[in-house]
Amino acid sequence: MKSKFALGWFSAVVVCSLGLAATGVDAQTVPVISRNAAGYIKLTVASRGLYQIHYPLMALEQSAVTVNDMMSHLPNGSSIVFWDVETQAFVDHTIEVKLLGVWTPGTNNLIGKTFWLQVGNSATPNFDIFLTGEVPDARTMPVSAVDLAVSGPNTLNLVGYAYPMEMHWTNTSFAANAANGSAMMTYDTRAGNYIYTVKEGGAWSRDIVLHPGQGLWLTSRNLTIWNETKPYSYP
Image (cartoon, rainbow, N blue to C red; front, top):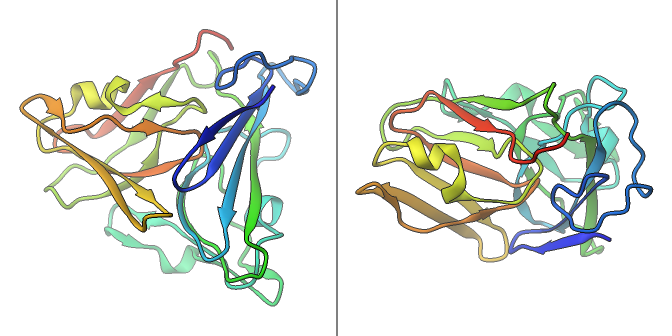
């Protein structure tokens, strides 16, 4: 059985043999290629849509996953950009662009990365993207560590929740340990604006549910590393 999460910016399906983000998943439906559970996240993106995407799965047999592996079917004019936290700017030399049916340079490894995807214009209204890989386990990533830049209120980190599991923002360790003035934003493609929450007086202004495959902007006023303990018991 597949568990669908209805999102404002895409619909996501996570299937794994352990049911981390799905209930009643048949272990026979997804092969276990190594000691980990293999799974996928299905993202449905729209023509001309703009998305923040995070790749929370680990590599399977190959060492990298590129746009050619997962987005070769997207229309011409599609592009991907990465954020450089040190310069607080998008990185020009790593931009991926699809023109004349070819992604250029087509070599960026997307595993573990967070990026912006702009889907090109097409008569086809929607496209499915599958993020595939192994679920982080007790050996590979019992605790995640995401480096953050700490500065003023306008310093941005483009990151994502490290594990492929739906999570309430206020249940994360960052939310618990962040100083007042810290903020988190997610982008709503349909509305064309941000949904944000700010910590003031020890409490967050709102709770936001994070979905597998979803990226976010994060401003930290005190933490230089976002550590999260693996939220599922097995693997």
